[in-house]
Image (cartoon, rainbow, N blue to C red; front, top):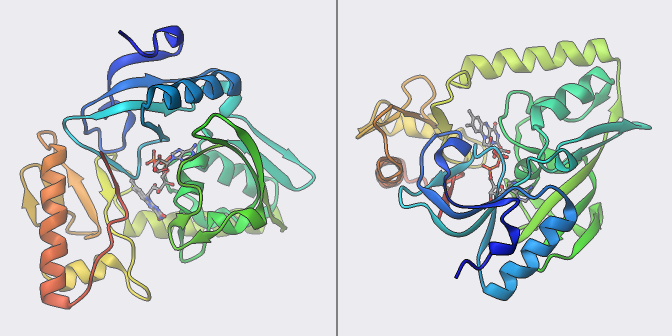
Length: 293
Ligand SMILES: Cc1cc2nc3c(=O)[nH]c(=O)nc-3n(C[C@H](O)[C@H](O)[C@H](O)COP(=O)(O)OP(=O)(O)OC[C@H]3O[C@@H](n4cnc5c(N)ncnc54)[C@H](O)[C@@H]3O)c2cc1C
């Protein structure tokens, strides 16, 4: 019997996930849910708990490697207008968990609100970025978070103040929560100056990362004080290939996904890079990419 038959208005079965990820790789989700409201999400989560179905949330899929076999349980995506809005009020921006991070960044810059401009060019949603405390050496998203509205896996919706959340290097205490909305605080600045700064950061990012290619993804977190790409280059691994997965020559912390690539190729390439880097440079690279399952 279909455990989620009552939710068929917004839940589908056996939905391929590849098209929802940056890498365009990965098999299907047993269930794929796009709730239209907080109430629908809450009742789905309660049912999943009763039925012992594992729930995962996917944003833009820009930090995910999903296995070729796909995932069991439910994958939730926040695509309804209720989860996508962006509003500015008295110097605070309120954005839905499914809103595009890039739109929040450009909105803040146009309004003369400084703090998120360093994230220009990073693909993803607000929820995905907050969950992993996305950032660069110009700052992390967590520094600007004022308040969050989250759903627990029991379907309970709560508001969390800044003091109730901890952000670390590419981590947060938000595992097992779905970010529904975030409020960001800023420092007021001249919009023209801020816009110039954002453009410079954008140019620097384009010069160092293959971001124009939807088929290139970032692999490892930067070890403290160094760039993961420099360590991979030092180990002589630029251009290493497994099947259709290749370490970028220009930006060695990026994998280029060729048309015939599988998730298994990327997994194998990651293993080889970690092993060789440890052996040749005595550095443990920590995978930034999250693997499902
Ligand atoms: C070209 C490129 C450049 C990148 N550059 C950077 C960089 O400079 N710095 C950096 O830190 N990262 C970078 N990344 C990684 C990635 O873009 C970020 O981690 C991004 O914030 C992930 O957001 P997402 O919506 O795509 O999340 P996804 O990849 O969909 O999911 C990532 C995690 O977030 C969780 N999640 C998604 N939505 C929610 C939600 N609403 N509530 C709670 N959890 C949620 C997922 O369950 C998963 O655990 C880069 C990636 C690419 C492909």
